[in-house]
Amino acid sequence: MTQAPSPRTRARRLHHKAAYDRATIDAILDAMPVAHIGHLVDGFPVVTPTLQWREGDRIYWHGSSASRMVRAAANAPVCVTVTLTDGMVLARSALEHSVNYRCVMAFGTAEAVTDPALKARHLETMVEQLFRGRWPQLRPMTAQEVKATAVLSLPLTEASAKISQGNTEDPEEDIGWPVWAGVLPITLGMGAPIPAPDLAPGLALPDHARDYRFGKAPESPPE
Image (cartoon, rainbow, N blue to C red; front, top):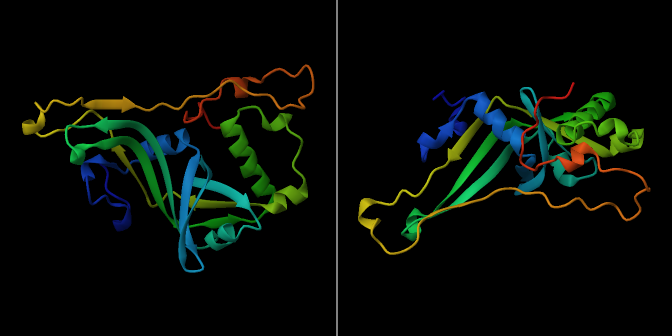
């Protein structure tokens, strides 16, 4: 196990489940686009759900430039959390019930991307990581749309992962208790695509929509 990059990233409880290597951290971030951003707004703690994406050694997220929460996060300390829930673990006592999960927590100061061209490039990367090949098909962004969208980033210099997996870990004296025990696996599934009611005739479902799987890491970074 590698060492924690800072005291606040070091796992103090169930430390054997912690991981600090970038390969583990990157795999979780790449597999789950939904993140929760924790920060202070007017001195009060706020946690905002949003989409995140990773580019090399940084994670990015976006929001409205007019958002009070987005403005409060820029150049301020934040905590970004990304979680994949893999199963519910049912034990023979209430105390031993648990959840199988993979999560990442990253700490640092959020940095706003202010250059319009760079901001547009990061937004293109977000779309292409989610839906490969879709960006060239879209109506180009306007200058006003770029201005209205805020993009923030955080370096992955203070990040750690925690992974819980496996079956029940009941104490030996509980093994014979007559109640079902085991794991209820959780998987993320996609429903059948629903076309827009005003979709132009003759437009086929694109591969990036038909094949998309939520919670699946992109095969390779976009060019």
